[in-house]
Length: 128
Image (cartoon, rainbow, N blue to C red):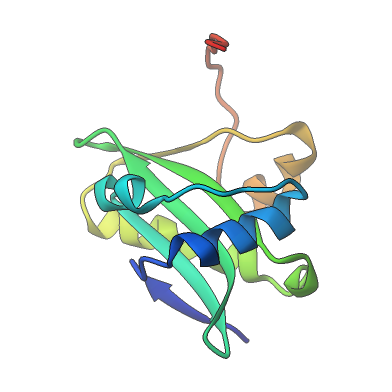
């Protein structure tokens, strides 16, 4: 079972490789400035290889947001994403967040409900 690490600050190459594999599209971005402002981020490591990741962004107050939940396709269906989200929830609570939000596509409804999230009404404006 992969080891979970809190705030591991993976390299841009590690995150890009994971996101490219997990999302099926090329990614080449340095997330260091984003992660340095996050409430937390959790990495899942198998033999020192990043195989899963979740970021917890926040508003600087009581609201935190789950972003970028990713697991390498070779490692899926082993409970890694569930462990990542549960650890992110624990750490967010421990660090003072009172609300944890997540947006997701409809096919992920069952996953996020199993992680404890409940549906809410929300609004969205597409800016680009």
